[in-house]
Length: 305
Image 1 (cartoon, rainbow, N blue to C red):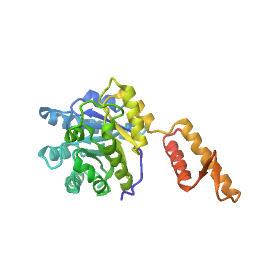
Image 2: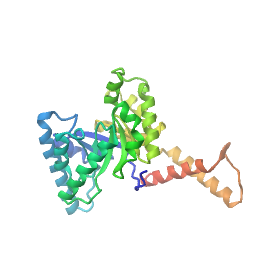
Image 3: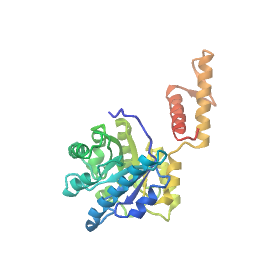
Image 4: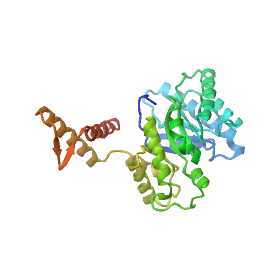
């Protein structure tokens, strides 16, 4: 089980690692996490350039944080190449340095792959004088076998803060239709399974990307459905998706007001020595009140309550 302190990341934006201008712009956006990519978004000939550009971005961030105490950016993660490959080892050696907060590890099917990551990461932290264990992991689940192993994988390391659903690779493995329709209902089971396994492991569940940038309504519906399935964030591919992604996983005004009313009613009844508590036609019990308190705590952490 993962009992580390929780920080909710609602929006995770992929940024090609070989595009320094895009990285610079992403660092100034309202996205919760930027995932500088060395995997699918970068062709083989540009992977070394991506490592160089990402390293330069981290050095810039570290320098500004040292010189400007108020300087803030989104959380900074890097998506590496596949575990065990020579490219993966090169990625780790290049990007583990001050300024890196976490890695996104693609195509994970087994705990054995997590162990490989831990070993390489531990050596790199020592070599680059980075505090041991400080680099966190978001694990991408992208295959049927990975999906069935999600709980074991997600609970296998204290570095793991969440699991990411790799919808495109999963769709290929399942031979699903190329075009998603109806809030991606063809992947409803897989997404629900991943969210449930993540909750059992006490880590975040992050939904896959909505690839159609012209269908923003579909993206909003898909993100809201992900939240209803129990996910707490979503990956995105363009700054235009940030606002909707953050909104989908943030408590709304009515939700906050209702949660506060539930807590107030419960506490008032307890002060008066009442056992069974009725509130707006609903019997309040501890799980309902606890969810209300969680909503208020989440809103407070986001500065919206």
